[in-house]
Image (cartoon, rainbow, N blue to C red; front, side):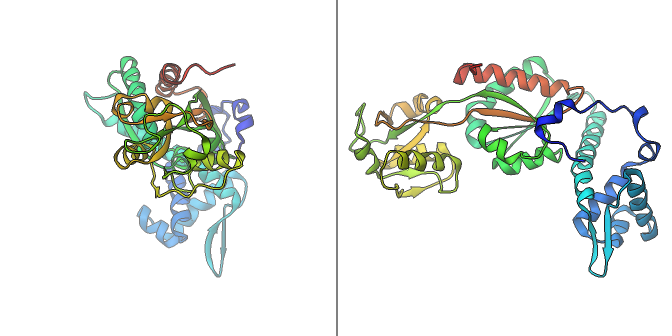
Length: 332
């Protein structure tokens, strides 16, 4: 039932006429029953939530097993649980339930937006790239409703796969890892370097260059040890043959780190596009200390559809245009 990223573009478009008759007789309630059962592990609770009898709930599961041609539920003395096949089915049917709910929401709108986009992204990219992306989207889709949600990439990718988001803007290396085994389209956008910056009052502030030894002496404000950017920094320090840096401050969010460096005479690392903004460039000094980090390219992830969803295709095109202006066009 699952499909890898490598072969998702070769999946045939399935029409209703091509569905086996057993599948075509399934209703939304069948899919809801499997979803509830996975969540609560009780046929009795499935019946309660759907407002039906327990035998009727069991009949829904039996219909599903017949339609998919494989056992989906295991019942024993310890309770009721889903088989691996059921979990694979559920990963797809949850998306279908989300899409049906989205379609109903759009249909119920009167005189308002005719389309809706749900975009997930990191706080940094929401500040740097998303505003210009959405301005371009609204040029093409002036009535579109847009819901922007921030969070960790692995959480956002999971929500995308479950149909709760239409697209996720993130880092391609982490996105590839997080989306392993999921049929997601990836639109490459571009990348940018990270630089060391010094806040006002730091001994290196105002200098264009500094030795790596002086820079690594700190004090540093850095992302938390488990973060992707911190791993890049620690790897660069290790490759330089220097001892690990122990930061004085650890904080989530590149913009937060810039504010800390600006106010407390510390060093930090930040992306080139952000450092160039007047709110930072007036007070922070970019140091050439022989350590420039380049983050893996940014990417826009979306679910694979045949045919594509027009609103998502517009978002992709707008994201590529904005990324080319911010980070430069992707090579190749």
